[in-house]
Length: 441
Ligand code: SAH
Ligand code: SF4
Image (cartoon, rainbow, N blue to C red; front, side):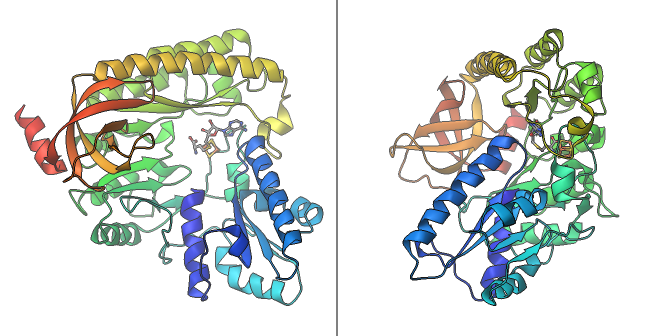
């Protein structure tokens, strides 16, 4: 989400004639786009600000403007402005259109801030400037904000109310990306499947997105378990370019904890949804988010999370120790009473179990054939290329002359670790060719 927001900020600033540079040393203006989701995300920002302070001291000859953007700006504007004399401006996630004016206020010698949240802002008319992607995969924000108010989460306070871009403006952007040669788009939103522009549901939008370019893969992040109607699952199953990978954040496997968290489902309902997904979309891979050590979590409740994860067998999981955030219901109502070392121990237990499950699942991939979208050279060796399967698994295979970034290739999986699959190249292919072959088989 922040990468995508930065692409919008790029666009607004470049319209003003500003040019991006590659190193902070060269910059006259530095913006840091921030996250407040957990304490350690904010700590990283404070440390980065320290580095910028040193930089400013070093080059007293030239002026340097520093701005804090995003969720931290929203959450702790006063604290940043007072504590960090270095920071000249503070701008929340709905106020980026105001950046040129705020920058000119700073030029006039003032400190500047705008952290007003909006009910309408979607930046729909702003063409993101994508500077740091690989030219193959792009993000497209389709909705902003969140109305769910999960007890632990700061997002509704920093990003405001839910609102969706019109389907028309999204489809237009997808068409442009296809014309520019992009092969994969991830539709983004804090609650992406609650999308509703007044005329289209998320299922409608996914169908429309699938029709833009049959060779462009569509993914989405991050959805909420409450908004998965069967219609949506069927559309994903039917359209070959809608990827068969779904993220379904569970947070916990225990009903009492889920209730304290204000998650609107039970363990049983969640498991039913998983079952339905696997029935309607055969071969679908699943990932999740889990929080350990939420307020009042007992050892038995933690065991329920372990058993949920063992039962579902996720292909991927993002796992976090609970971090108390100001203004949230949990902070106001409950005590953050699980000791730090217990949180950490529970976290390492679920991580260890998850790594074993991933390895087990990846071993089952050996011998299978997959369609891989080539993203570029593998991190480990120039002699190898890497890319993802439709099911979002990273595959590494030997480079061949005629294969380039952005190509689709068929591979047979030959080996694996818990994080990566190794494969042998069969041939260059396409989504349409591959889906004809698999239907025939
Ligand atoms: N909208 C998405 C989540 C966005 S935040 C959703 O509902 O799924 C991404 C993840 O961060 C959450 O799913 C949750 O697992 C984690 N998270 C949020 N607040 C947290 C907190 N206070 N402490 C630890 N993890 C948190
Ligand atoms: Fe936070 Fe996601 Fe819950 Fe919204 S749905 S409050 S973003 S965890």
